[in-house]
Image 1 (cartoon, rainbow, N blue to C red):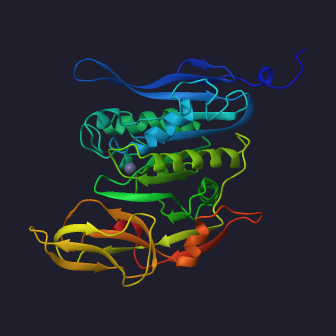
Image 2 (cartoon, protein in one colour; image 1 turned 45 degrees about the vertical axis):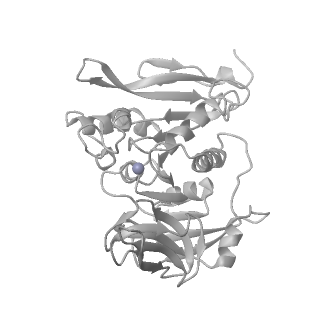
Image 3 (cartoon, rainbow, N blue to C red; image 1 turned 30 degrees about the horizontal axis):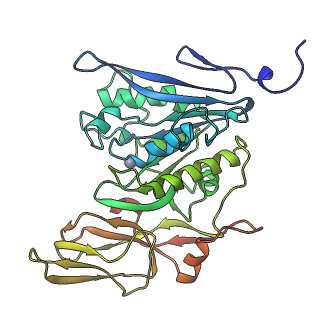
Length: 364
Ligand SMILES: [Zn+2]
């Protein structure tokens, strides 16, 4: 009889006919059928299978083809900073990993090549989950991901950024009314967590409803690798993996964080060309000038004041604005408390404050 612990006791992981032995990482794929030129279409997947029992965590990026920060987060988690798998700098040591990490760096490959959010048929894949096997091409992509990865994962992290017209301070979104989701969001460790159960057909809503607690990262803007946002994503995923017992690591948490039910946008009262005076993550006082609007010759026509004291979580990047356009998403918070979110927690767990302002997240 076999004795001892470790690799010998751990079973292989099977994915689409490929066997992944304990302590290894292997590239596999989800097949999507041929493209217009007869080329086979597929979604690349990388699986890190540990040497000890543990949960299956799915890590998904690029459902929106133009949102690239999450793609880079997945790259770094697979390969480390040198972008070579299985070297000393790897972020995750597969010989010590408990459980399995399923990495999907880009779901919407063709959308990425077209530098657009939607699939080639312009549909938003993130409104079509759990997908349909015999449906349109976007429904089939959603179905392949849901069957191949979501249904096999115990937990999911979905990585996004703001659209190209805006940027987001890195923060997690989760359904506060589902304890497992809120636990994951807290473990991720951002200073701000926003409540959102997600629109119908979104991955986090449909996966969570089917028993796979799912959280979403919003970090930075589209069409860019922004290393600050990428770093926040890497740290958060590693925090979640430590929380789930997959890796050994001390959770890095802020001393103070905000659980935000609702936040409010400051809006342009008149159209024109926008000059923002603040950055995402800045703390602003009520009445502080946060942006100017000019006429086509650059002369100031309006000043936008912050309607509240708080922190800028989302910010418009597109200079072209019309009356009613969202300029800055501001979460209520005192300067003193915001300063406390910048330091790491001590012996006690993070202190929290609930924020419930007047508008919902999806009104922007
Ligand atoms: Zn997105």
